[in-house]
Image (tube, rainbow, N blue to C red; front, side):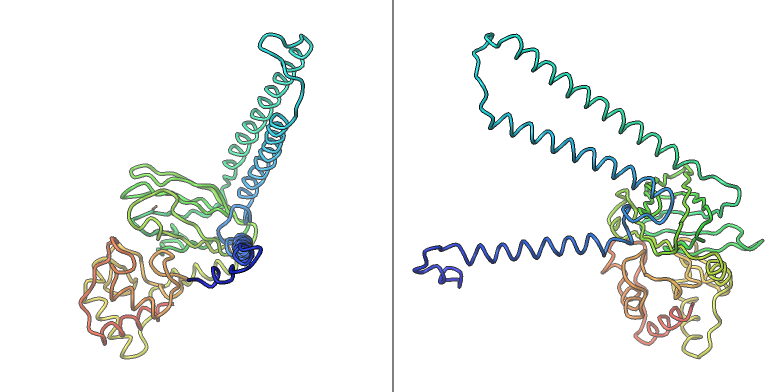
Length: 356
Ligand code: CUA
């Protein structure tokens, strides 16, 4: 017997404690929903634009929202009046002509208003779509983004003459400069969505698509794959870091360097193990013998925020768990478990953790 049922014995209002608890729980849920909606999702929200295109999309969204809200309220009000207003009743075919005319006029007016509103929304939508494609400028930074099951390869083409910069799951861009993203996919259709900067754009096998973005303010924005692409579609995130131009130049310069040389015997051991074991068949670490091309470039892995395409924060513990059992937390991905002793695992984790 529950405490709630005991409390009802002999009480004139048996449901009161239960109702009060329900009310408290509902209020708590509402507060939680509001708090998460207003704080936690700023990093991945089209309602907090970080660039001019997202600002235009946000304006369109609010226009739709307010017009639809007013229409909804008007329709519900008309429905309530129809349900509860007791006007004169007439039999079939006995309605007076002036009443008939009023009805026709009202229906005609409502139809006209609907058509005008829909046309207005259509024009606004097309105009916004058009304005989003007019960012093209010759000073643009070009970045290739390849969507794969289930991570993002990011390549800066020729940032320093003769050098490419390959990284993964993290895109850095300078504030105030247009960026042209060249999008491709070698496997299935993915879709890149950086809500704070732009709308969605599909990555289609065998077909290049493009997306222009520009950030107006520094910030870290979370992007997601927005097209179902297999078992780990939900674990395919990309962080977009918009930073002041000098800071971005510093980051790009550091990324263009080869991997840090080990400074201790443990780090050397980690590097040798990485080169000898299966790791090097798939991953590249520039400046070492590891030159695999099918998995993320790890040359500066320790400089990134997350592991496994935004699945966890980039910490030693998560890295060790990820290498020890790649199929446990992200099943179906292409990374195989490599046979390593505890010592060997520690050495590899230490080495990868030194790759700033
Ligand atoms: Cu890639 Cu969903």
